[in-house]
Length: 155
Image (cartoon, rainbow, N blue to C red; front, side):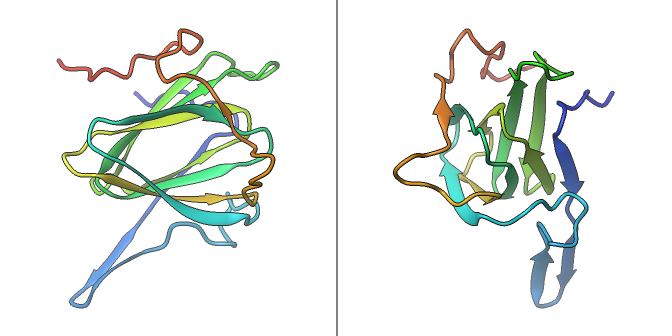
């Protein structure tokens, strides 16, 4: 059963184009329905089992794509007035599930590398990083403020 998406969260299934020379995967195009604007592109990584969480932005929208390894991306909507306040979304993306997840401003997010190798994530964001006044607000990954347990769920 598909999960109820947090208000403003959008996804795009990514297609891999393969031939005898190699692969090509488009991630985000300016003519995509979900394209908003361009700020910058960066690479972030996590080693196996590492959790990088929680944070949100007041202005910035993120567009996450895991290009190597696998990650569990978790979102939590704590926005006052949001129709989905209190909703948690979980996405598994990477080599085995090529997907772009768009995370709107105000939504907490974090990820955990769930592969046996480092997960490499490309993030195309709508704002340029401001070194003197970062649009980044952090909470401890195991904070009780956010109803989520990063432990693996077997069974």
